[in-house]
Image (tube, rainbow, N blue to C red):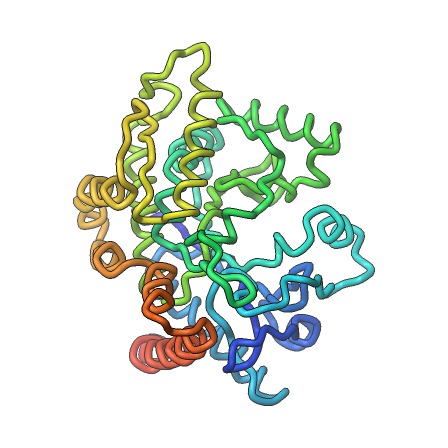
Length: 383
């Protein structure tokens, strides 16, 4: 049985020339389904939890079509790819809601390090302790999803040395987040952080993976993968999601699949060792994505990110096939073969193409891709 899946999609608005310009106040006021971020230059929409990938595809595309049409009422404006202020603007914070005290805290504490665009993938798991085990596994493998999705190699028109500058600079908060042994552990830890002030509210847990639900930390019903850069191609995003879902089916079916059980690190220091390992893996994946050499959580052995993903792909392919969504998993091979968005952009950059030209072409291709998907796939489904 397929798990329910939904996305939180953050996107920049701006010009076809790549200049990022904020319209979130007007968008949120006039379009259903969009919410503001602290900076007005990006805006977020959320897809409802659904099981079928075909419907997910259309729910990713349709809000963008509506948003593009709305932006045209202001002039020649569009949606932009990438997860950072790629061509400029990182010197300022454009507040979307100046009277919001939480936004004030974010601006004063983090500045434009948080003015990024990303994809959060939510997958439904209702049993809270099963959810905690799933979070443990996926947190230690989250660098693989970052490696597949990296799309932020530039800031202010310059290559930064990262494939995911967003995650390289993102202020993970609180600084140390344990591998939660149980739901009770998560509740106790969250209450402690709120009392200490290391978290301003229950949403202020900015780690690669977190348990989510309608009344955190008490009522939980989904795993939220937060590490991914913005993936503008819906087919590529669904392939990454299919890998995540197939892995979660594997975790659900095998109770022994748990880093706290299967890892060979010493029991006395296992939690700290695994956290240190995954922090280093996240940093490596942010820098070099698919080419990064990571350390496997089972025994600390080195493995290239692309090879680890290929191993996982082979493991979970039979599950995806049995569940009927292997056709949505298979485009992952194209990412492994041709490189992620950041690698493709850096290839052009190293060949001498300037960043503005790279982005202008990417903006055009993104719009064409969405229109094609809507016309070929989504309209027939609606009819």
